[in-house]
Image 1 (cartoon, rainbow, N blue to C red):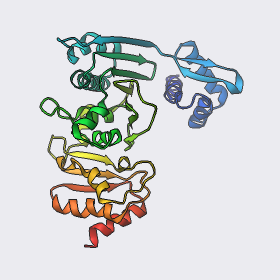
Image 2: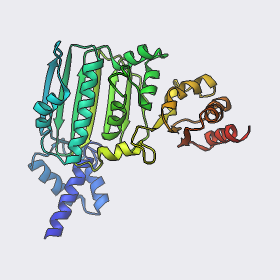
Image 3: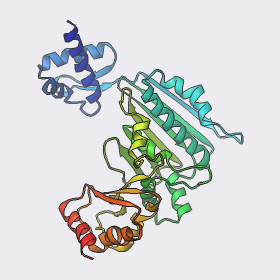
Image 4: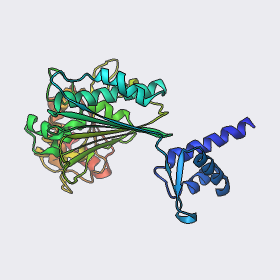
Length: 344
């Protein structure tokens, strides 16, 4: 009986975890995964409906399911001359709203919230911060939104960059801050890699990162009204820890932030090819701050020899103390990198 009950719990957990991405065919997906009949899956769906964990809409073939939000909370904080403190807001409000969770999950929320709230306090030049938290049986989501100047606009202006897309490229590398005396520039980099999904919306561009993917990318969109919106999502039973994420970006026995991943695709504009030394130099900006740099060529179909030469010969020769490694490169890109490294 215990084994049957445990299997039933596994089936229901699987349904809950896959419902958002498969609202129309979760029954078929679950049936195939566990090797059980659709009728058996439907019994679990009915139980979850009775328990108010999910809700169904439509009939027979048009039936869909979605998770029921078990709690939703929001609050607007006015930024006064005395301002606020992120640790006080966490202690007085956020930790109580999030509630009981595994220690590692709570630690991720603590880190992500305090970093994003503090960024809005110190950098936004806005007058208020809006917070929203929604929780269901599987995951928790949080919005941190300010009405300030916009993060990408501020980075572009402070660093004299070409445009806001270029600001996202720099943000993706890490160690980027417009106030080095007060900030290390690590908060967004590490937060984006701790959560299942992490998005920043500001101006006319969109920064997004998903856990266990190497993607950092921009999507053009209609201009956001004002300020910056950060959206974070995390499974309530995620197994990762903050320490594990930090360790991924340190080298050897060192504890500093010494390793980064550079999404090469962000150096492209539209479908343009990466062929010039100026494009390579833009990609190389600030990488000397790290000791190990992984250049991620995912979704980059080709590169020019001058582009490859600038990174893997010229820069590598002038910075022998920095390890440069291409990853996710297709055969054509690898060929160009090899020519740059070994033909001189």
